[in-house]
Image (cartoon, rainbow, N blue to C red):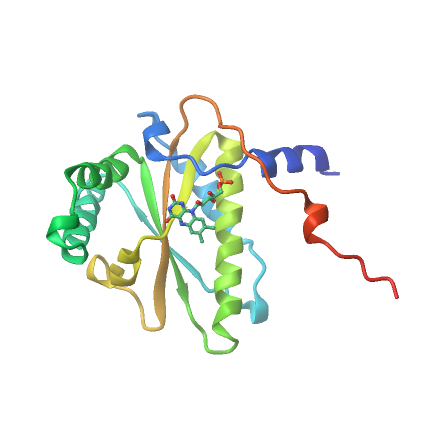
Length: 190
Ligand SMILES: Cc1cc2nc3c(=O)[nH]c(=O)nc-3n(C[C@H](O)[C@H](O)[C@H](O)COP(=O)(O)O)c2cc1C
């Protein structure tokens, strides 16, 4: 029988961990497989399994950093661009060990929101497995994601919804909090 306390502990200790908090240690292929396998077990209506992932690693990270910089420059007015922001964009990519592009392949068998919801659950599964493995990660959703087909070929009816940065965590997890669940729940009894 699974220990519910351990499960809640992992859920509560999941954090958005930024690339500046990643060490240089590599994520092993066994770890990556566990992360992707976790994602693949997300619930999904009509068994469409709509989540798609592209793992950017090695040399490709540099190409991705260049792409992100280019898009930032294209979409930000020259006077609004900052050197600090540019350095941050490149640093985020290069400090990550692996970067996963999150996308949804729409089946048209159901409302699109259901496939997005299923994919978000797949991401949560990955994120929890990362937490259990001591891997820092977070979901980033800059405007650039709508241009992802300029970085890599997307299939027909496939759209990118996020960038999942990952790296072995150095340092402790930061404290966090949530408003009490009782404020968000109503019991209906009659
Ligand atoms: C769909 C989605 C998109 C997100 N996009 C961003 C983002 O673009 N930039 C960012 O810093 N965090 C992003 N986040 C992370 C949230 O900011 C983060 O989950 C929230 O602050 C709570 O912190 P926690 O993840 O440590 O609990 C995103 C989270 C979700 C679920």
